[in-house]
Amino acid sequence: MNNDDSYHLSLGRFVDAFATAEHNLKFALAAMAGVSREIAQALFASTRVDVSINLIRQIYEAKGKAIENEVDKALSQMKSILTVRNAIMHYGALYDGGHFTTSTAPHALPKQAKTSRYKLEDLERMSADLLVIGYRFIWMALHDLPDVPLESIKLLDGYARAPLQFKPPQLSGKRIELA
Image (tube, rainbow, N blue to C red):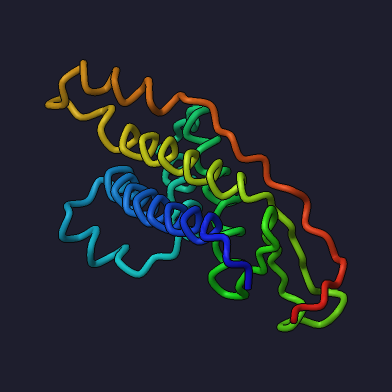
């Protein structure tokens, strides 16, 4: 194990940002579904992130509404970041001082194994993106409500349009031996 704490600090920020974005995703899902908080808790409490994303897309389709470009980007980016989060949380990661590597190799058949290598800065970029994504989800939930002050919507809109920073790499099929 590398004694450099920068990976673990970045990982902690990432996990915290992910949890906040996930909360905001469920808030947006409840608003999009048009159900009360109590009903939303009953329906969506155990809904996984990928399922929540798909449900939001389906609600847009059911309502005959086009998904705003910024919302579409947020949903897609959340799904990309979810892939990295799941790899870290379910398979662990090896940190070498500048990069971290995730691999399903010990848990999959050789032809199905996936390995990805990321720069430490990618964790920071994903954390920053998760904040923007969270704002986009709050914007989704509030922008059509009549009682929300216009100034609040404009402020949220500004935060929600910040550029996303993380560019997901392509997964490789290369096998990396994990010590």
